[in-house]
Length: 374
Image (cartoon, rainbow, N blue to C red; front, side, top):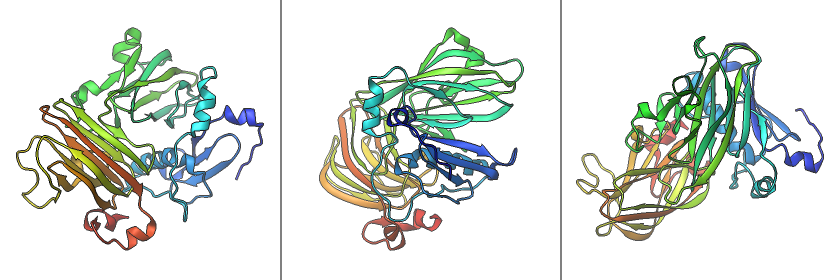
């Protein structure tokens, strides 16, 4: 444990972050992940060992470890819950966000493997060849992310690159899936080495985006500014929290929208408005909502891509709940399919499952799909 003391004012200038340390060059299994805010640090080994971690860092550090586990070829997410600690949390506290709102633009260094939920200016400078780097950006559900190129100093001819991806991608799985995103996959990649500074800003289609980059020469790098703008009708969302409430509205649009929660959760549907009658039915082979063009489905799985997840239940008709289901998967998705003929709306609550609920499922639960891998 490394402890560093700072004044209260200095603490506000050092929001939570995760830091990667490679103890053996070229060996992903040797990665260590440190989480801290300039005052307290906790270290996690990629293999699962850990000391204490503040709950406010959990989702960010969880996803970075997911990325590391993917590099090692493992097939499931690491569970970072601490025993007895299952309270709701945010990546950044509301108090910290209020403090930063009235301050000058927040700035810090960008790491080779990083995750950010804060607006600001971020600079990456290579201290040695960095060949496999990525940074994940996430905002509130009701926001788009805009990435601005401020300064780029990389050698495209020498094999460097800087690419923005509209969404998140991990182990070949994408969010949003190709079925849910408005653009073809090839158009979701924006390569700086092809477009240059002729395109100085890129806006995401949802509340997540990421960059891939490779920089060979020490001293080279780039500076980006991250801003968010309101999204009146959020469609595809990754939740920042394991507990919450959300209303997904699709107003006369022919599109599919997915709300992803990267935790095993209890889902409670309190209201569903579609263009036809009432009912909830569990999915059976060769069953489902048939030819209906408007419905909601619950999905569960261990990956990121909703199109590769297990269909758990179909909600084919409007109703006023509650209707609830326990889904013990690493990732749970509420997905709405809309024909564009109606204003469709679904309101749901979700909370992370307690360990005893995973061990002793009862009621409406999906054990055989996911719990065997937990």
